[in-house]
Figure 1 (cartoon, helix red, strand yellow):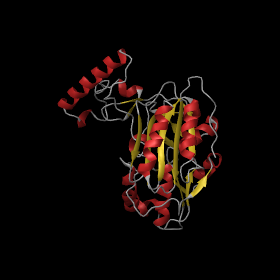
Figure 2 (cartoon, rainbow, N blue to C red):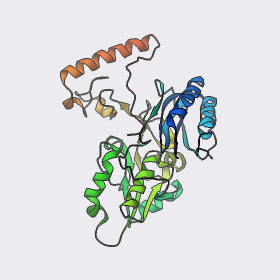
Figure 3 (cartoon, one colour):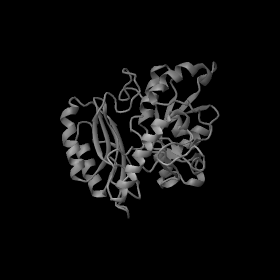
Figure 4 (cartoon, rainbow, N blue to C red):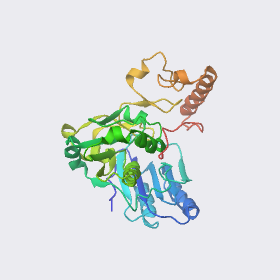
Length: 322
């Protein structure tokens, strides 16, 4: 069982968590879970589905501990997987507990990570695996996540959503795996949950030697010293921090609130960038009417911030099941 992280100077602890376990009645779990989160002044998003729970929450350290005790009391959640980090401010606007068909959306109803999954590789052993020339390394994340950082030599599927991964693999299988002896396939994602499904999917597709990074990129950046790391760039996270780096310190990227793409300092210098309205990635895909609407939203958010309020229309960085 994961133990709570130490209290932080800022008082804002971030907990990314998931657990694949059968829930027979998610509706009965939803209200009590949301109630304890609100009572403890916790914000974020938690997803409940018949296959388990997934989400990221943030708030006071003791409040996070209370919520985690509640979640671990749910059926099959004693060994809940949790990764802790810190934030300089509350990275979420509100608390949501949502009911979903899947806790991470792949769109493959026959995939069950509880029955078949790849071999877990601890962060300290990951470098040796991906440095092996007989290992094919696949980044299972979305294209905008890969753009800000990845491992040396990893294949980028260039998918817009995780649900695109199965079609991508089936279309590229022969090119990726070749026609000789079956290679080892190592896959990774932000916190591990997408790899639970992607490795189970590859096993179902007949690929035997499948491995994935235990705890995901976040655990690797937390535990592997930067001087030994094979990670380059930063890691996109689905909250207002946008990215984190080695040691899980907050990164340098901002967020385009029109398209939710991460934006660098260089992007901000582009004539296509307008705070709260557009960035180089989305300017051509938005109409002037849309940009006019975004400008008004941005103005309202600025006014709310001046009053010390969170604007009800504020856009979060993403969703935990992308």
